[in-house]
Image (cartoon, rainbow, N blue to C red; front, top):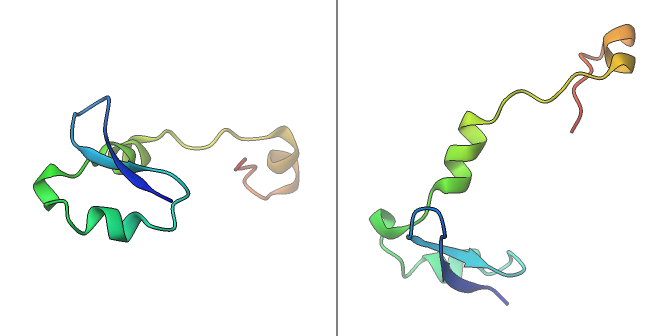
Length: 64
């Protein structure tokens, strides 16, 4: 079961648990009070590293 928790980074509300109940948890949290740290991290994340195998065989070599 999921439960609301306070984000250590921004202090806003996020969730903890299995992930199946996120909608139920966040439904009661106003949008301005919801943590967006994970969303921000995804947008700012560097490109995945390239593997030598992928570079040699043309798959782009993206890991992950």
